Image 1 (tube, helix red, strand yellow):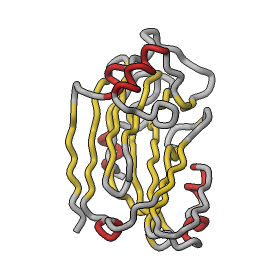
Image 2 (tube, rainbow, N blue to C red):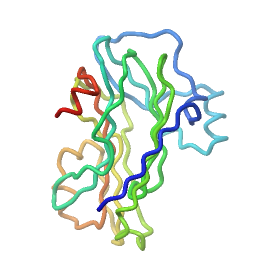
Image 3 (cartoon, rainbow, N blue to C red):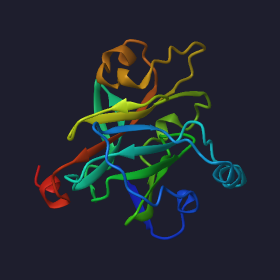
Length: 208
């Protein structure tokens, strides 16, 4: 049985020191993109050892947003199986920032979200992937460009391959929607992080 330890960290977080714009804005289209940090933010991120080019994202929504859901999956038998997430977090701001902190997704990750009214982080630690402990090689693809979306759409932010094979074919993250492309290579472990913005409340998501 999977053992998932979930710790909610409220005020201390990587992006709690990396601020969002104080003035909300509304875009014609909703999007998420790699964050463009100021010089001061880059200094703070460097001090914390954060990979600022790949794992911090800004997003713009509209006033109808109700919740955010971040999921972690492992590819099993050609299908994505939920590792962590599945619930949601209430969210009502029209813009925000998310930071993903991880090395190997088979061990877990830390998610921090910041906006005008939200400032907190959640850490997931997974003890169920012991079959990968002896494998030291991994390759990670991340969302690297501005991506527009609609509500309820699952947006892949990162895909990580963990394998003992000498060669790795690494795709862009939108290949999350084609899991068979990863399955055909027989990698020992393939993991993904996705985010979904919803017009449903957390209670409504829990009912699904």
